[in-house]
Image 1 (cartoon, rainbow, N blue to C red):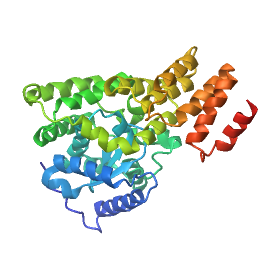
Image 2 (image 1 turned 60 degrees about the vertical axis):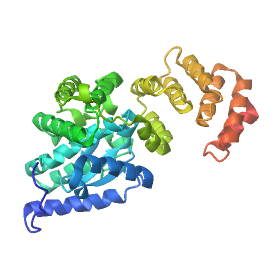
Image 3 (image 1 turned 120 degrees about the horizontal axis):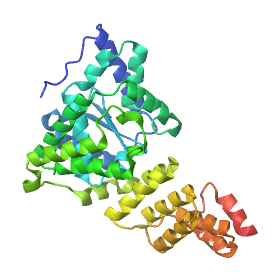
Image 4 (image 1 turned 90 degrees about the vertical axis):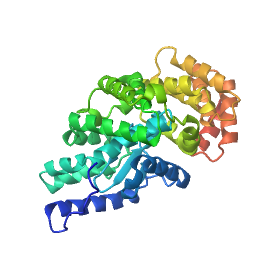
Length: 359
C-alpha cells in the first residue's frame, strides 16, 4: 500500500486545496445532519480500525443522516457514512465491505487523482461538497444536485474495481467473510437496479451492480471464503444500529419513492423477520403508493403488527387515516384516540383531537 499522505506545502496549489478540505470538514463537523451518538460512533470507529489497522489514526468518521446508500472518503482522512447504508446493510460484514472499499480509494490515492483533475477552485469546492456533505446532504431537495455533481467527479471504473479488490483483502485480513461484499450488490439489485440505494447518480460511472456482484463473488472465492468463511456479526450489528433504526425508517419513507421503499422493507422483513416497525413501514409505503387495493393491503399489514411492543405510535395514526378514508369513522376515532394516548405532544395532536371530536 502507498505510504500515508504528506500534507502539501500551504503555499502550493495542492496545499490551498487541502486547506479547503479542512474547512469543509469543519462545516461537516458542525452540521445538524451529523449524528452525535457516542456508542454508535464508537462502534463504527471500531470497524474502521479493524479494517485499516495501523492506518486507523489517519481516519475520522462522520455518520450523516441521509436516507441513501453511500459512503465517501476525502484524501485528508474524512470518512462519511450515510444512514441509508446502515439501513440497507444486513450485517457488520456488509458494512465493512463498503467501508473497506472507501479505505481502498483512500490508500490508493484515487481521490487525490480526482482533485488533480479539478481545474478551478469552484470545481474543487463542488467536489468537496459531494465528499463531505456540505451542500445539505439529508435535505432531499438537494439530492438531484448531488447526483449531477457526482457524475462530473466520479471515480473511473478502474478505480472502482481496484477499490473493490482492496476492500475485499482488508475484509479478509480483518476476519470478515468477504462473500458478504457481493451480497451487498445482490440486495441493491433486488431493491431495483434503476433505483438502487435511492436512485442517486453517484454510481453512474461505476460498474453495473450485476457486474460488481459477480466479480466480487469470484474474488471472494479466490480468497477462500467458501472454505474458511469469516465473521458476519448480524446480531451485534442490529444491536448497534437499534437506537437510530426508527429514524432511518422514517427518513426512508420521506424519500417519497414508495415502490423502491416497499421493495426495501419487504426484503428487510424477509431476512430480518417481522417486527412492529418494519410492518408499519411496509403499510406506510403501500399507503403512499395508493394503487388499487393498496389501502386494504396496508390495513392488513397494520393488523399483523397490532399489539406488538415495538409498533410505533405512528401505526395507529396511519390506521386511523386509512379507516377514515374507508368511511369507518367509529374505528378511525378509536385509532386516533390510541395515537393520542401514545403521542399526546405530537405536533399534529390538535388536528387529531379535532378528528376525534368530529368523527
